[in-house]
Length: 194
Image 1 (spheres, rainbow, N blue to C red):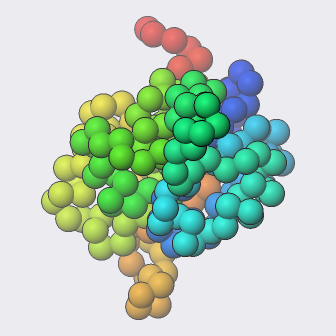
Image 2: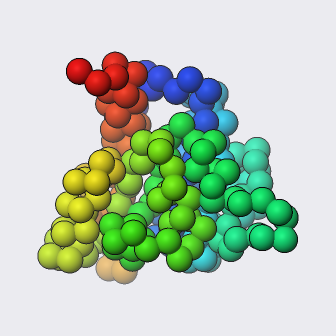
């Protein structure tokens, strides 16, 4: 990235929701970059599938915060999804699988990660990791629904498939693309209604 975009977050509180696509393994590096570049306080919420691809220990170590999920912890007496939703100034869903996108688009909150994202009033930026599913009618409908609902969906890119080893479309967007989208969203929010 030649020049990092200005991202006006008053308190620098960013929640990253990690779902079960292979690029979840890169999220600890993203967290370190975000903390170094912006000085943000980063928290992470994971799905069950994400825990098979990236360890909670790595996410906690790089974020400096305990990891939320994949399950609710009612015995703590806290309502984790509501607290995290209220705490966040921005939510990044990195990577977002077709399954997670479909559930979110239809208001399904059967996981801590989905409930947290559904309850937040912060801007939500979704970085899909879809492979060939990116062009399927159902996926396109779900992404359109998210956009219509005010969710900021970053366009997928081209990447190397873990399956075939060849380049294909539908790859998770780069950190540059995600940050550029978040910059546009937060700048518009800072300007307020016109």
